[in-house]
Structures are given as C-alpha cells and as structure tokens.
Amino acid sequence: MTSFDFTTPAFRALVLPNAPLMTLGAGYAWLEGPVWCGDANQLLVSDVPNDRILRWTEDAGVSVFREPSGFANGHTRDRQGRLIGCSHQQRAIIRTELDGSLTTLAGHYEGKRLNSPNDVTVASDGAIWFTDPPYGINTDYEGGKQIAELPSRVYRLDPESGDLAIVAEDFVGPNGICFSPDESRLYIAETGQQFVADGASHIRVFDVAGGRALENGRFFHKVVPGAADGFRCDQDGRLWTSAGDGVHCLSPEGEILGKIFTGGVVSNLCFGGRDRSRLFICAAHALLAIYTNVRGAQWP
Ligand code: MG
Image (cartoon, rainbow, N blue to C red):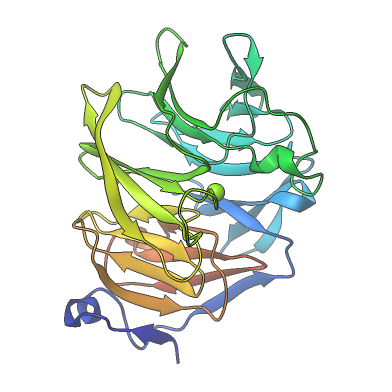
C-alpha cells in the first residue's frame, strides 16, 4: 500500500488511499524536468547525468527521446505545444520546434553566458520564466565544470522582443519555478545551501506585476526534509513539491496538507495522464506515478 502522511484531514480527499505508487522505470542517474504532453499521451523527463531525455508512454514504457540532450534539465511547453527546455551544457534555453529542430532562445545576458538554466515555465502571454543557478557547471557530472560568468538569477524572456530581463537576483540557488493557476503568483525554490543557517531549502512566493515583474517576495514554506527542487500546482492552487522523503502537498497559504512517501528523495514532478490527475514523480533514480483525486493546473 502506498504510504501517506495525513497531516491534515483535508488531504484524505486529495489522494486515493487505494491507488498504488507504481514504478514506471528504474536505474536512472538523476531524473528531472518532467513534462506531460497530452496530445502525444507521453511524458518526457530528463536523466541529467546520462545526458538524455526519456519518453514514457502507457503502451511502450520508457524509451530514449533524445541523446545527447545537452544535459537537459527542466522542461515545460509553450501554448503552441513546443517543448521548452533547460540545457546545462549549452547553458541556454532551448525550444524544440514542431518539426523537431532546435532553437536557442537565450544563452547570454549582456554578452555573458548564462550559468546552467535549471527549471522553466511559460506564462499565457508566451513569456518564458526560468531559474539560472550554477549547479550544472559546478561539476562534470551534470554538464561540465565551467566558470560562472553571472550571478544566480531568475529571468523573464519576452515573447515578442526576445529580450531577457532579470526578475529576481536575491537567490543563491534558484531552482523550481511555477505559476499559480491564475498567474497572479510565482513560486520559486531556493536550494542554495548557504542561504539559511540550517541549510534547509525553502520556497518563496512573489506577486506577479503586469505579467512582467515580481513584487512582494516572501517566504512561503520550508521543506523538511530535503529540498523543493521542483513543483507544480493543481487546479485549485495547491502546490505539490518534491521533498527528501517524497511529495509534499502545500496549501496556497504555505501550510503542509499531507505527504506521499516514496521511500527516498524526489527531485521533481508533474501532473499528466487522463484528466491530468496522475502525478508523475522523479524519485531520483526511478520514475514513479500515482493517481490522485485532484487535477493538475491547466498548463504545466
Ligand atoms: Mg531543478
């Protein structure tokens, strides 16, 4: 049986206690960047140190989608259905066009190379928001050791001008990034270990001003144990985040509602499948999935 922590009674209505936590694949180095592609009925997910993007379908299971992948990490899709990805090795945001060709959307800021874009989301106006910590260039394992040319920041790539603007720069290691369903708020993970005395990861929330800037940044939730590497909202605005012991479900007020225990570290997750009610979980070395009683936000 799947193991849950019903921190609050409300969590019982959000999950299916009899739904199994299924293992869809195992033996990976470090899974990250999952994205559901409903039109193709497939999940794409990065196996970062193995320099590949994997594809999972119900019928065929796990296969290789792209290898090498430029040490791809976070993924999302834009409103045209194009895959938007973070590349550690190319230190860039890469778009996969509908014909399969690749376009580099952003690789520099004022002539200096980005660090290693980690996670990404697209607003309904087409703007691409992404985090740029140095994790992918700190080691050869996840993309290749290189010198950082820029501080850790969060950027917004304008869909019309292609201009890159800094929207946050008070992070040591910005990581997961996700809008609330109405796009009034943006959640960003801080996983820079120096940031707080006890080394614990936390999530901050910002108000989105005019679709272009962030205001009123504030502490949202401290994930214990582990780190909020990546997260997604359900359609009611709850935030489902990775943690050191599984998946934690947070209310829009930042209170923990409950947990799904996975037996180890989770790096990222996304909703998908029929009705977007299936949670796909990157459990570091294994790909897991569980049906829930909520639906993921309309857009990943
Ligand atoms: Mg990440």
